[in-house]
Length: 310
Image 1 (spheres, rainbow, N blue to C red):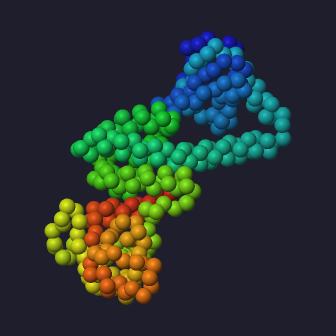
Image 2: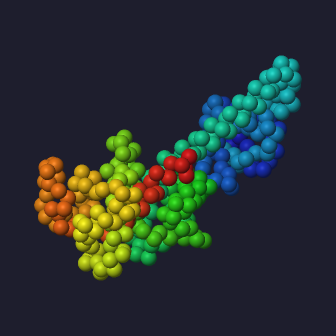
Image 3: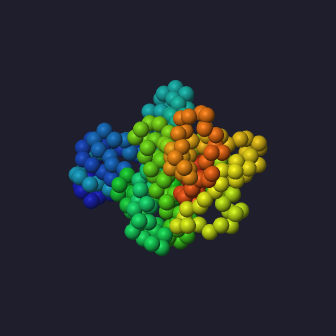
């Protein structure tokens, strides 16, 4: 059969009684359940799974360019199947199930691939918005345009981030408590994707425990911060860490990576390559309180992201 531009092959919810093969032209499929668009060109099959499973049409399919379509009625297909061995229908049903599993895996992969785009857009909106609120509809529209991800998948992504306390979705707005963490997440994921290795933002367990001990010492001291910078004595770090890390001792070797990352700064110039220099020779360390808190939050969130998305 031939269909002209603008005509509909089927509409969402209609019962299907035929299998269609596109011989020429272009059709577009869209659904109220997702903003993703499917294109059907020459060689495409339409309705094969709904026909086998007996389900209604799951999308509205409209002709975008005049199309020539081969129609195989349900009765004709049923007669063909009836003439074949009984196991053929079982195989087709099995393959249909496998297709749905593959499609689900593809959707998950699409969400993972779209995560950097989502984080980048959130980061960009936050940089231009001082009240830390973002329009949900704007984000959905922008991601759909950039990566053709459907509304439901975008909401799944946001739900995963919400489950990790990265953001909150309330009504038509997205609220972010710590915009810097969004930026760190984006930077860390991009580093892994482009460099194919772990980002320098990812800390070892020992490094995280030392920073946690430093934060605990700062909070317990009740000393005011000077432009976000706090000062912690080396003795306090060692004592707090020993208590928090079940007797583990902080040494020049374990604290060196934190200095190299710029998370803490010794009060005097130190050659960390000299093993004879004791940690006690450094009287105290300067620490950027918010930077450390953000880094600890990043390292709490990042290992859980893949589990949440996959």
